[in-house]
Amino acid sequence: MSLVVNNNMTAAHIAQNLNAHYTNLSSSTEHLSAGLRICSAADDAAGLAIRELQRTDIATFQQGARNCNDAISMLQVADGALSIVDEKLIRMKELAEQAATGTYDATQRMMIESEYQQMASEITRIANATDFNGIHLLNGFLSGAHNGSGVRESGRMKIHFGVGNDSAEDYYYVQIGNCTASAFGVGNQADPRSAGFTVSTQEAAQRALVGLTEAISSKDRIRADLGALQNRLENSITNVNIQAENLQAAESRISDEDVSVGMTEFVRQQILTQSAVAMMTQANSMPQMAMKLLG
Figure 1: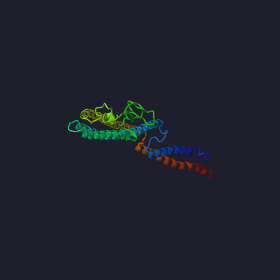
Figure 2: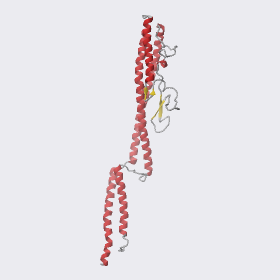
Figure 3: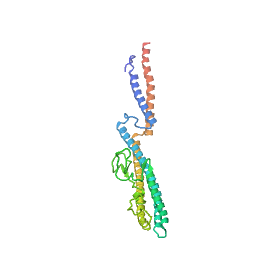
Figure 4: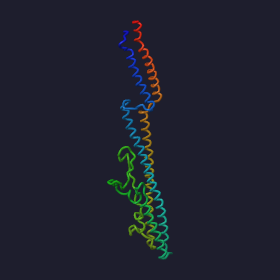
């Protein structure tokens, strides 16, 4: 190579290498500080797209698990209220048994009847008052066909936990029957033809024993359904949490920086950058050799 003073091509080549090494060193520093292999689309466009889709699914699954937990809380509220209804029905059957015998006169039977009807009214009050987040649970609001045409949907409730909208994979319905006294066929708000309508006479009390047995069975079926739904929701939570965990692991393999590899690359680029800086100093001094020829 000729010794010239107008253009220092050696320094130019070294400067190009220095810029490349410094850019790589900056990139390595960014990845290590963020803990990510992919910090921008320029690092791995396809990997970035896969990672963002996985992150979306992970967040959706985590919210789905929270949805299931909310539904479990709702079912526990309903079951707790039905445990009180259970006590009232047991007391009503006790009163019916008392009124079914012949050792009471009409006045005493009316006292029994009064408490019997009060118990029925309390069952209806509990059914109408039991709600979760403003949604009535036991008065028939969550029974029957689904109606989602208004702001507040009625009928069976959809519990959504999946990332799509497939009825076989992503959601199912919760339905709770009407638990008012009239729906159970007990008390004077029920159909007068119901066996549990009254215990005001010995004959009516004997019929009420049969009607109350049916009412208790109806209540037990509703509670059994609530228990089965709660178990199903708990299984769904386990499933979506496993899916979220596996997706998190997959996302980590694509996106996270391997610190040992990243640190090795950082040291390599650091050494190359320092070497280029040292050589730049030497290259810049080379044109000065021409001064000795001129001097």
